[in-house]
Amino acid sequence: MIALIDYGAGNLTSVRKGFAAAGANLFTPVEPSDLERARGIVVPGVGNFAATAALEGTWTSAIRGTVDRGVPLLGICLGLQWLFEGSDEAPGVTGLGVIAGRCSRLPQAGSLKVPHVGWNSLHMPRDSRLLHGVDESTQVYFTHSYAAPVTHEAAATCEHGAVFAAAVEANHVFGVQFHPEKSSDAGIRILRNFVAATRS
Image (cartoon, rainbow, N blue to C red; front, side):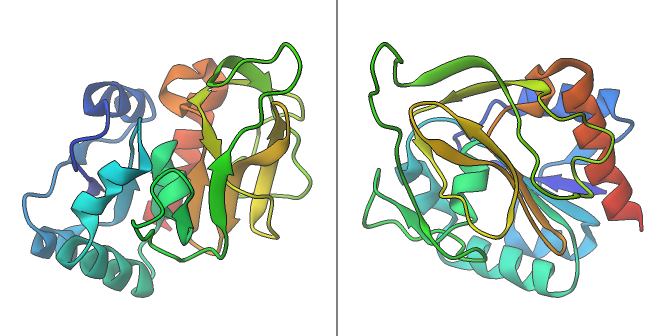
């Protein structure tokens, strides 16, 4: 079973529908100890990075411990940003820190608007289990104002005023800044790839 973390900042219904289309059902853990039976973890989220403060303490410890046991983790949108050390959006809130770096606001460049809302294309500089079968320049759906830096964990980048990490992958830790559950066939392919990682 894949655990869908509910910390009050995500549209869980659409994420569940996306995973159902990818052939997997999710359960929502009530307490951190419920993660002991998880074969995968999904941390979704929209909105302000401050919302992730609800995970500080026992939830963060349980998620980190589960990942340390080799259980795959997927962060979606705000969930990807939480994989990093923190964000300028909420400087006092600490991320999971499995990837070094901090998230920052996208620049207001020319006629481009922030937040970045809508379809944009992916550039994939390296092979990735999460993005296997997704073509270069595939369009996916974004909605965000802050973004993660491009580090060596970047599996895909995108540009909106600046180049940012659109997807990250570090061993069995994955993240996407876009919403796969709203990104048509490519998004479902990505969710299927994560489901496959939980079963390997």
